[in-house]
Amino acid sequence: MAQHTPTARICRVCDGFAAVAITTGTRLPDGSRATLRVTCPTCKGTGRSVPTALVRAGR
Image 1 (cartoon, helix red, strand yellow):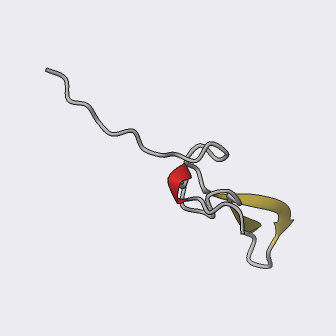
Image 2 (image 1 turned 60 degrees about the vertical axis):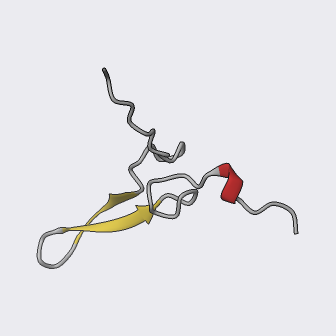
């Protein structure tokens, strides 16, 4: 029989790619490109979503 695997709670906004490096187009003195590291604001760089039962609502 097939084994059931638990579904991973992947962030809907970043689809699991929580951190990316974006090039700015400028070059540093050593010739390499300047990059910015940007993390997903929803999952805060973890790549996983928080279960709705753990989300704090209200005051």
